Amino acid sequence: MKKKISCIGILGSPRNITAFSIHEILYHWLFKIGYKVFIENTIVSNICLKKPNIGTIEKIGSCCDLAIIIGGDGNMLSAARVLSRYSIKLIGINLGKLGFLADLNQNNMFEELLKILSGEYFLENRFILEVKIYRSSSLLKTSTAVNEVVLHSKKVAHMINFEVYIDKKFAFSQRSDGLIISTLTGSTGYSLSAGGPILDTSLEAILLVPMFPQTLSSRPIVINNRSLVLLKFLDDDNNDFLKISCDSQIVLSLDPADVVLVRKGNNFIKLIHPKSYNYFDVLSKKLHWSKKI
Image (cartoon, rainbow, N blue to C red; front, side):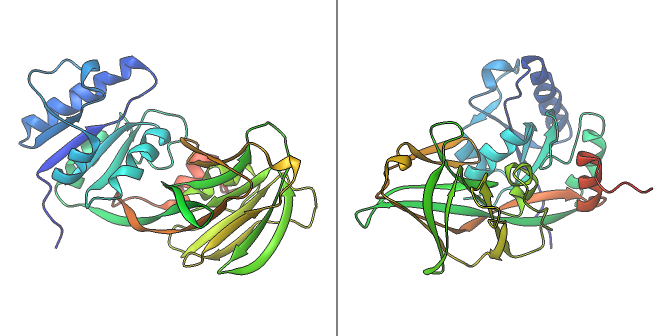
């Protein structure tokens, strides 16, 4: 049985400040129909509300049943990384461009939300990636990614040398601009731009996509999402200024002697979809992909 939604958090910071009117309208609408509503503390100053319930994203994650994230995919990604640690469900209202993760828009949000709040939805759990950086066998840094973990250089168009091990077995060495390690969610993101395949979100897979490799034999590879990916770097002058980026929002610096481990994380993002949701229809609409002749 689906748990009844009684407490809702509103998050997300759109690029256009006038878009915060959507937050106000949504807050008043939810409050009027009987829900307890929290507004994220970082955006409350942009909204004119009388004594609203204010909470950090962590508080919203721990006390709300549903998070409504307003903005584009960037807002969805930054919120989802934190909210994956909680049992809260997520849905997005897209004010950005593509909005692969945000199912609703301004024109249909009230109609669709009424259905969702009455239990007419389905829940999809999407795994995230966990990245750990070790230096001299000691854990140095850790982070998570909803879309992808990217190895790259600080310098633009600068090749780096590295080795990839999968489940402790040598897989390949490469000289390239870097490597994208993508989730299913991220297969329509940076990975797709780099020539990677679109993966059905029901699969149990992780995608490895080379970035501008020097050899034509380097191709994307799909592995089981239970696999451990390990990156080692060849000690030469070309491996200075190494970086690991998570969803293009968190950037971690590396030393050539560091070892990077990437694997499926223990947490999931819990996306709510309207009953009418169809992944392939989303691909067709967002990418103008595979239209009928």
